[in-house]
Length: 235
Image (tube, rainbow, N blue to C red):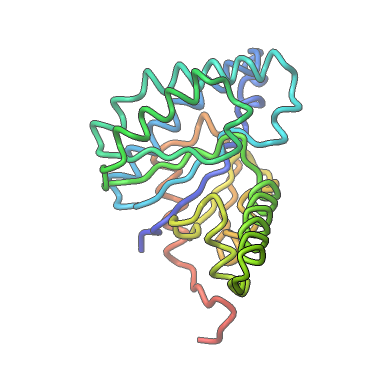
């Protein structure tokens, strides 16, 4: 059984570099290879959505030098790896608070999003400057604005249901993850897709992200295929 949506918390780049007596950015560069490998493999295996937690809201508090290096790496990788999306008919979507990003990086992102919007083999979602709490907050704020507008027009606001609230989330239109993979041995979701992961299956591996390739990816999918998903029901 192949999950429709697989999400990955790509963890361990810094530790991978430190084990080799290198600066942390060296690990981030090595991690790009794993991103390419996993995107290509997901496309071949029939996964329809692959979301990657690339940079969290909390990551902005890291040393300025590392943050700047990460932003430069992301900009360079988007340009260098653009063929990955075209060759594999992969649609790119980036989700997060992009207001904090450099305008040039946002422009590059928007260009690739536009030129790949009709590709349907696989959708790769890069979670950039994202956090679960930020997503819930912006959804609540947007609903509050629509509620207030309805009242001001003398209309009856639409009742807030789970389905309606989900439509305000940044991931609206993307199915919730079936499988969440976290590398490097950490066993937490770190403020990631708090609403969307309500019934997601978790898979934790000791493998550091730069060493996570198609073999490790296949192991995670194989593990998932053996699980019984009940969604709170009895089978």
